[in-house]
Amino acid sequence: MIHLRQRLRLVWCKFKRLIEFLAYGLFDSLVLFGASRVPRNSNRVAVVNLKLLGDYFLWLPFGKGLVAQLQEQGGKVVFVGNAAWIALVEQHFPGCETVGVGWKRLIRDFRYRMRVLRGLRTLGVSQVLHPSYPRDAIVEDAVVRAVGAPAIGFDAGFPDRPGIDLTISNRLYSHLLPPIPGVHQSVRSADFLHAVGSGSRAFPLDLPVPDLDERLRARAFFLLSPGASQTYKRWPVENWIKIIRRALECNPAVSCVITGTPAEAALCRRITDALPERRCLDLCGKTDLSGFIGLIAHARWVLCNDSAAGHIAAVYGVPSVVVLGGGNFGRCYPYPESAPVNRRPVCVWNDMPCFGCNWICRYGGTPPDRAHPCIERVGVEAVWAAVAGVMDGAILEAPVSNDHGA
Image (cartoon, rainbow, N blue to C red; front, side, top):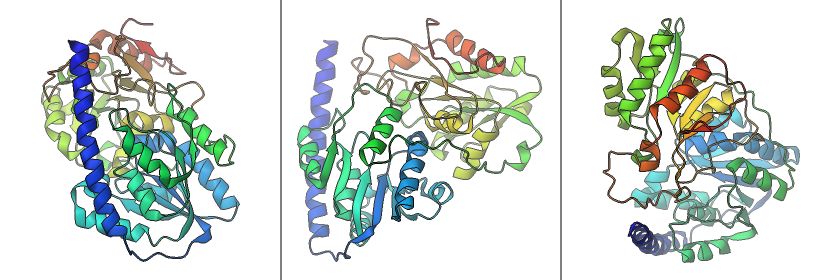
């Protein structure tokens, strides 16, 4: 019965997505019909990456290698990125022209979608490089379609999407790389570099460190980021409270800073209210993107769920502990030894036979404010063992662990 429920959910997801794909596709066709097009400039190349902030940092070493190769060949790079983090491109990729696209707004605001798609049609690039894996047809492939130049990308869609959207969208690509299942994103990014002629030259990262909030410049602190892109990926609040209390008891001179998006304010407040006031600072929703990155870069260590905080910590070489579920285990976390980061996160998880479900959970009926079972079952003692190891400096090269200590 459990497996039947999972199959029914998958069928519903695919049917719903098919209707959306057809509706957006018709709208896009009407928008782009007769839209003015700028002649292609052979020196202009578009790099499209619209994923979330954590995915951007995970791809960043390879992105720097890709853009450097294009610029060495005399190319003018137009970076089409997620509006949530497009400002970082000016720091990380000097000399690139940037175009920000709001992912959610592109779906919800049809006037915005029309304006963006028509604007992309005027970029005048000769080629589109789209290294994202997997591809989203309604947003990412719609952007590639609007740019209107020969494209290179992966032949890989999401498992909960109908096959027809990938089949149709594949026609936008002049060259499709075969899917690479069961590997970390860094392996796919290296494969993309090789396919476009850049070898596997991921750049070692030495990024500028943003300034720290004045209130924290004289304080030693560790960071907790208890949120995630989806509620079901959040380890229970009461567990984080237990971990933070023990960490503060073991480190009398260290404070805890809690951060997150404005939408996570209530979540962070629950944790703050349960901890000593003078030892805990709630900055949820009170920092901009640069401030958020600065907090991570200056922290003694970082604690988080499967979210951007762990990827940013890896880039800046900050020790981190990440609580994982099994939805797409291995795609982004845990990091392989080959990953070109300054410090791999320590990951903690509880093995279950359903790992790899792509978050189509076979255990239906999970309340909207609860984590999926694979995350709820990660034990406090397992996470504390990882945190204690990081605090003591015992984990230098970030091995992975699970709830059984393996």
